[in-house]
Length: 149
Image 1 (tube, rainbow, N blue to C red):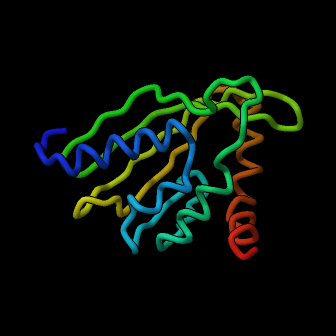
Image 2 (cartoon, rainbow, N blue to C red; image 1 turned 30 degrees about the vertical axis):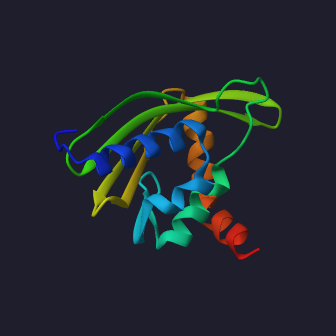
Image 3 (cartoon, rainbow, N blue to C red; image 1 turned 180 degrees about the horizontal axis):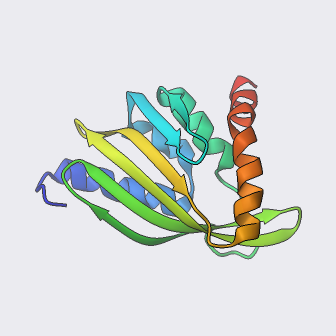
């Protein structure tokens, strides 16, 4: 980080840990009230802290069933107001364990909190890319259904 702002450094470290743990329940305290989350492959944007947390928790918290972390951060870098995280994750779909690469998050920091997140997903495996293209198109409906319960 080019800034020497200790508050921003702590925010970034907490952000990276939340992604590594894939525990988005804790994410709300890092977000501005007007935060936005855009899932780039489908071009859908959730607006406001509660909707963003709802969108993230729908996919969060799955267990890989082998005791290993579900998310592995490949690389990250930051500057004064952006954090970029490249990662891969494990998922179990109908009993089949998948390793999905090609995730990238770009978060913008404003006044010591995250005010926008863009997620890019571009897996290298063509079969997984096809599966994700189907799942991601239904994702906004799934998040609305879960957050209304």
